[in-house]
Length: 493
Image 1 (spheres, rainbow, N blue to C red):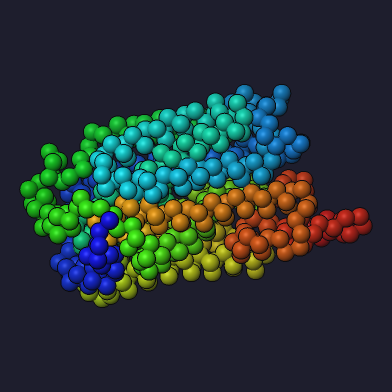
Image 2 (cartoon, one colour):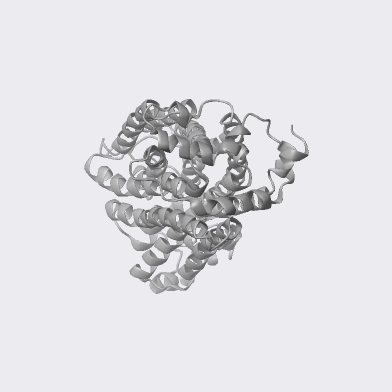
């Protein structure tokens, strides 16, 4: 562990002021630059990885029989009259919540170890092998579903481990490939695949489910991921100096921009300084808030749309994809705008990160709260859901890239720590969502119970209910009436 000099590298003001002085000379990467091609390759790898993760939230609608008996919540025996292409299982909402959030458990376990190892071992091997493993596990999900919910959970946990490796290790790429003035553009382009992946998955999943059956969804995305992992092994090199296709001018530009940063590599991680750093804790808490909202929107948006808007699986997929599509566009735009502020010296690096973090955390909360005051308006509900998810994309130019500003030499490790804390929020929110839905279905939710999962669950999950059940506008807002009150309640509904 290093002493005082290492600790000072984690403090934001000196590093950010140096970036302010050097960012004015930046220009957008050329259309034929290798670093832009690398960002696009990572973009499509992220699209594939997130497609494999997101498709389950919509296929769950086709996999689970919402009207069947729930006495055996973990039973996976298809009903006798099921279409062989679409086997249906009797999983309770609690079990569904565990299945949907199980990949998050795996991702949690991988964050810090991968962040540390990404500074030691080649990123090429870590990202390529992890993407290949995630794709192979995606091919096994239909077979695991036939075995039981526990097998699916185990498969998804392992898939989460591999996806967590890709998620964290890829950040280390930009410590050697991104000039200081292009970090926002290149990072937002590569990470925007995390937003486009769910949008593509939800669009395609609904069509595949209706035409070919839900198991084919996992086969398609798994095969695509295997192909992309092969492309990654063939096209990527860890260091620009060793890439056979890079031009001398681009190599010189990257080397001159990162000469101080690259020269400091190979030193031990100052763990004590990390734990005592206020900027690291601020970023971590921001990631917690981001993941809390994002995981609920990511996992339960199709369920909410199905229960409130009453659309078929194909229309559900298109409507669920719309928020992620706008989030993808806004994430790319945020990266370009943030670099524009820096190159024109309109704002400091610190001000830019604070601005985009505030927009990415406050605007989604505003639009989610607006759902509480909407009537049965189809357009209003879709608009608020779309804007609530889309405005999360501002965080790409804020807390997502911020660790690269405060300590570039330890970027992989810091991303592991901050993403771990952030995913803890996502895990808690998605698990509580399944519990709330299970209580609503069983009729055991107490008055005001939805508020215990904060305002996002209060609306997005409080109104979700199984087919054929009452629950009124509030879901968990009040206890379900019985006797004569139940008849009047059903008439009002």
